Length: 324
Image 1 (cartoon, rainbow, N blue to C red):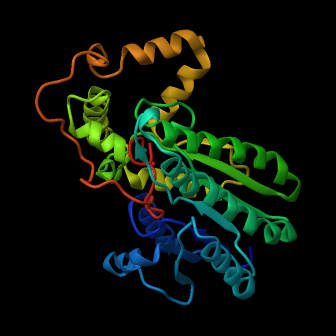
Image 2 (cartoon, rainbow, N blue to C red):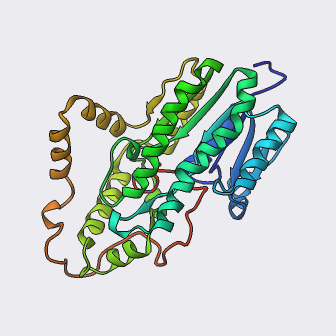
């Protein structure tokens, strides 16, 4: 695009985690006009991390579950900057719960942040992109969008939905030269596992070793924490993958952003499905204890002590907290 009119990038969930790292890398490049968003209660994080508004940087409140806020951000971009050229749907949240421990309201809260909000933002920016016959939409998905993990059922459901809708969108908007991509991070070396949300029932089971599924939460929680502290993938590496995808002339639909994402993608392609699921099941942490007698002693958990009434809409995804 002409130097006098740098592309406009709208990034959601930009005040923390992977979103903040992407924002910083965009700022360092200095080649774009940026609309960095977060929930209103989180806007103060930008200043704390040295991110400030300027001629080419706007900091805007956006809870992706609120229709009025979605509309306001896109309409402002259309009216003053000629529309959004690149949409990066990064905001996400992760509930840790088995299927039996999720209510309708909690299920909807997960879907609103990870699926409904991003797809509505895509719908809002598309008319201007079609008029320009150009545009980029990058949806931050997860390994959890290609494979499901126990205790992460509703999270995987939201990412599977995002992947399916994004794949359809890839076909629909190609005639207008609009490129659509899914970024699939796996485990990322960070403390983001601490941001995982428990439902009311999963919180209770995670804290009471006499309840069903206590072993599921204990072993999966410690396994995910261990993995996220040992893997070499960092938020900076994943952010660079996002920006490289954004700048490619012909970006692919799916981009594996970490080694484990590439590995699981390969296993799904080459192994017979029945053997693939058997192999993963046999390698779940301490699977012999699942469904057996209740464990003795307290169950260790990284979750907050109270169940959240609503999902966060500015946090990034990881295998456990989003899988990001």
